Image (cartoon, rainbow, N blue to C red):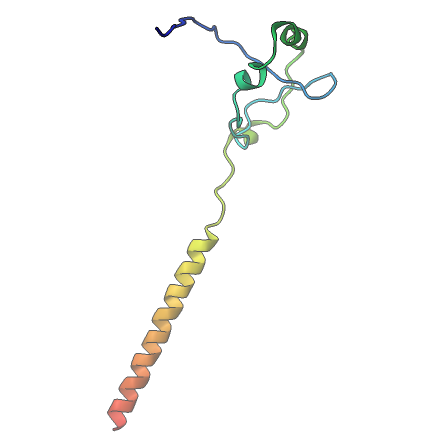
Amino acid sequence: MPIFELGWLPHRLTFVAQCPPPYTLAYGSASVGAPSEPVSALLGDMEGERRAALVKTVELGSLVTLGGAARLSPPPPPLPIRQWVLWAVLLLGVAVLAWMVRSSYRQLRTA
């Protein structure tokens, strides 16, 4: 018989520090993507005592604006180089085909 576990996890904000303090929390950048793995996978394999030793409460300092409003807008999309090259090759092919038609027409006209 399968065992089901039902529960509710409140919304919590978790940070994983990888260097010594003091820490700066930067948020709101449009150039940062989503994390590759969830934090639950990172902390899920640890036992209770080790996990409790790593998880600590911190105090918030004052708010400092780092990048301003310009950092909140997404970066411009990259130039579609492959699409431009494809169109250039297509137009070059049309130009070569037009030159061949013109050359054939001149040869037929003189004959």
